[in-house]
Image (cartoon, rainbow, N blue to C red; front, side, top):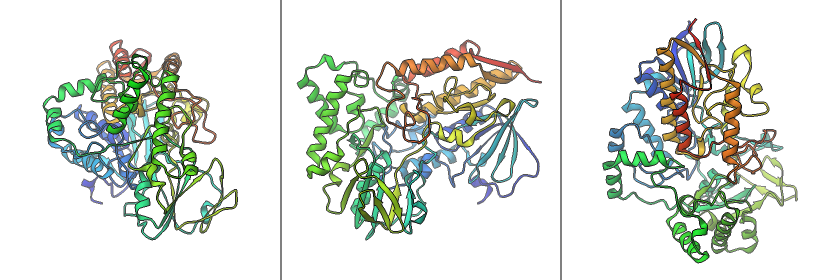
Length: 548
């Protein structure tokens, strides 16, 4: 691949010196590279993928779409020129559209010359004597950098369940989070999908339309809402562009980073009939509206949540014909405490003659065979293609996978053996000059991620320049600040239905052996106010170390 495409052709013979290394070339990594480079720093980004885009490069599975309010809002906000010139066509853009956008951004801001693709960072060690990070890559490069910026992605470390016989399967096998570049042909084939999280629910209706037969192996029934994807109204887009400063300001104030105000009404402010009418209206609208535009107490009031859950179960009953299949599809958890999924015809897919649902709670997988899957009850499911829609070791998995080593050689894996502890969700004691974008105990997956990446990257940039202005070479959070931050995250979550006990990847419940911890800072914009407060108080909670 030519050098201008971001691929290094030969390994460096000597150690290279940079101000910062960014790991990741998705929304977060690309903006961090741009922001730091524009501020005068020497920066390089690395990514294992064959192109820019991060999650949107890897997740090419059928039906992959944005589930946040998309269009002109799930995108970069820092450049009004970019907002004015890029045309989104749908309210929930598909994977190809988002990837095309990110490629456009990479070209517009000349990012590729400083991105090395198909290159993993294989080790990162903090050198106390030099006050720098010693970094090595899969291409044989050795880099000496003062700062290490980890934009690894919250949903990038794929989770492959340990199922007996996996290696014996003779057919095609894929994971939704690591989908091949070429189109997978389903026509005339027997396809099995394990998992009904977001990627499974998006992919299943699409696959069912083409496959000879589709068998879905459901681990947990889900509440999923019609996506309501539709073409964007040109007048709506024009208005958003005309008032972009106001729109961005609203996004900054929203609990989710969304372009509209949070609901002010409590469920108690309406009668049962009024609530049903509102739920009906928002269900028809589609998207996340029914959860986040209805009432302010949906995730804090168990009675309100239970009422909404029953409304949604009634919708499932209306959509599924077979009573036995219906019972398997009815969820029993509190709405919103798992990732809220959007779909296009998911429940109705089970009315098709070529679709079979296997409830793994009733009949678990015993083994994968060369020709398919056998369950504990002895039923054989013949398959030509097996798809794992089994999600990710979310939020923390990629950081543990990188496993940088901090002061005294301590590994991140050991540091986080009992708790995923951070300060501000962006820094870690004993790991000086290391910053995370969308790390654990940040808003990460429950806030507009492109906007959050911008705000966090800008804070990192400003912190680095503060250090240089003050003649400081190192910044590291204190253990006391780390402990206080963990308490703050837990206290905010404690006011809601979110907790370490929920069976969700939010709490690590999907990964065997992973300790349970709710790792998301709730409260959206309050997080960014806290970042500003820390900076205004000369980086309160940090210890600074002068340049040797």
